[in-house]
Image (cartoon, rainbow, N blue to C red):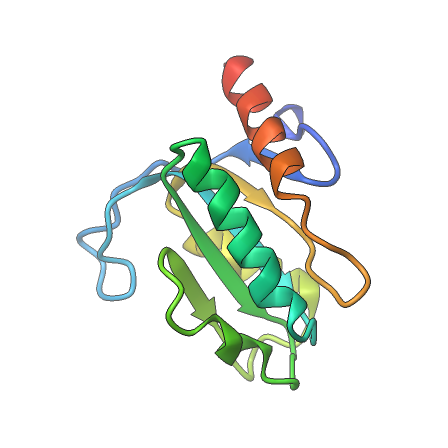
Amino acid sequence: MTHRNLLAVPPVVVAGPARDLAPMPWPYAVAAVELSVVLPFQNPGRRLREGVERLAEALHSQQISFEVIAVAAGSYDGSAQTLAGLPHIRVVDSAHIQDMGAAMHFGFAMARGSWICFADVDPETEVDAYELVETFHTAREKV
């Protein structure tokens, strides 16, 4: 990944690994998707689920295959549990990940999409799902 692949802040969309991780043990034994969305979070409360649902709805409406990797960064408000039952979501809630940088790094390492983006979810910020989709389309068109 180079800096020339960095498109916008926020959201950011960069070229991803587009790799098949099937030889690796669970949870990696899955086929590649078009877009991996990394959501590092720290105590966003109910905004986390609402943001993920809006994002999934926008991506589904554009027929984009995707995964969301939600990574808790020292979160203690139970936000990770609010994502239970949502499709295309992988939740990482580990005591070893204590800051947003580590959460983002871990999420990028787990990504299996042709493209990777990240968005910030916190109590003061809403995920703009359609801006993220527009940024993704722009990135795809430039290749």
